[in-house]
Amino acid sequence: SAKPRLFSGMQPSADSLQLGNYIGALLQWKELQSTHDAIFCVVDLHAITVPQDPVQLRAATRRTAAQYIAAGIDPAQSILFVQSQVAAHPQLAWMLNTITGFGEASRMIQFKEKSQKQGADGTNVGLFTYPVLQAADILLYDAEIVPVGEDQRQHIELTRDLANRFNTRFGHTFVEPEAVIQKETAKVYDLQAPTNKMSKSASSTAGVVWMLDEPAVTAKKIMSAATDSGREVRFDSVEKPGISNLLTIYAVLSGRTIADIEREYDGHGYGDFKKGLAEVTVDTFSPIRARTLELLDDPAELDRILAGNADRAAGIADATLARAYDRMGF
Ligand code: ADP
Ligand code: NA
View 1 (tube, rainbow, N blue to C red):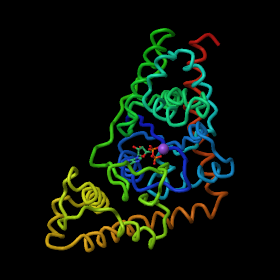
View 2 (view 1 turned 45 degrees about the vertical axis):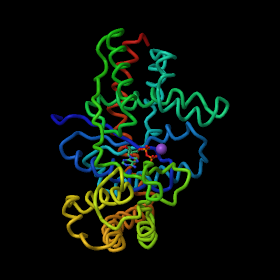
View 3 (view 1 turned 45 degrees about the horizontal axis):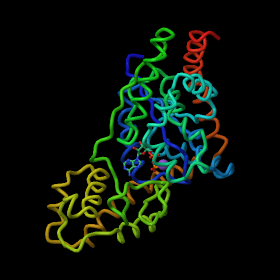
View 4 (view 1 turned 30 degrees about the vertical axis):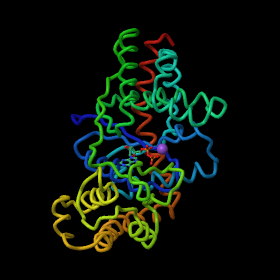
């Protein structure tokens, strides 16, 4: 096809995706899928680099896929598949491992941070080679565009380096992808600790808005979001990180500008503002939640969609893998 190929994915690391995943990933994916030949993956093989319960992993994988669809990823237009259903991913990762320097992998910031937290004995080798599996995910599809958060920039650089190195040594095989780094205006912070990124793997989830929260729970979390001691609804990420975060969320979910929202709440207290945001958020997630539950209610149909999409993905990935095998001497 003439459209540029795009690849992106998320880990099924919790039962629900969170507001930040929606604003920072799903919303952009939905927009990009019409202008790109888009492939979206639930990267369940990445999730086992930290301990996972098999029953929980299987459930979270299906729930994550259902949320992609419910949020607007069209599995007929785009390819939406589960990583473990396409065997080429770990196969290519092994080959790429053999052209990755130990020092090079040791310099990955995410690995350094996570392994420091977990200690040498709590860290498995899979976590070390995680970025190599990520490179395989991208290179298997000749992806030109990879939308990611700022924290993934270094991994996409590594992917480019590995593609280039393989091409130089063995002959042209892979496309060197470009990272499209998420805008700062698409970054969402924890509602209780508004200087930390909202995350599905946060140690305390009191400030995390889950896409599948019941509406009353969503509203309650927003009403009790941490704010500063002032009264003005004004964007100032240094002095007023809590209010600024809520303004960002409000603007993105309503499609309005921050200035317009500031004007609406001029002279009102934080309570009115939060009430307005709670409404906007509930209006956004209620239909997504309903659609997700509907999809999960018919597991055979969801499995059929995912199996069909895995076949489409494998059709591309297997051809790339065969090319790489051949070049390497197999
Ligand atoms: P999490 O921290 O929830 O596990 P990941 O780091 O695995 O999320 O990221 C999955 C996707 O969601 C990425 O595209 C990332 O940029 C996006 N994302 C995650 N958290 C946020 C956030 N708080 N604000 C904006 N985007 C986010
Ligand atoms: Na995470």
